[in-house]
Image (cartoon, rainbow, N blue to C red; front, side, top):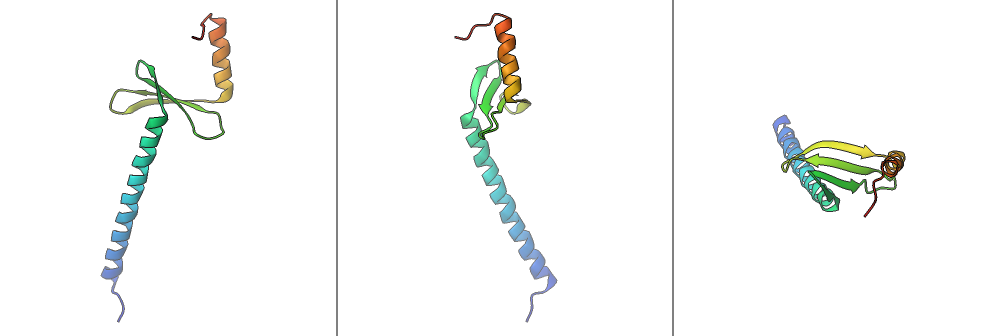
Length: 93
């Protein structure tokens, strides 16, 4: 005796629900991991690296509830920023 269409349909819904729930759980774990890696710079600005060898620094602004802006700084942009800060007389602590 075979399984009718409804039996397959219900099984498919259940397996999709488990997949979605697992994906959400993994996404929450990734978000917690990313939040642990970021460093508060002040004025609602946070910084972290991308976690890979790309050398990106990721700046975010947050309002206490959610991320409101994201800026990805590539290595060349970081170098340009350092040159700019030096030219303007900013000193590192």
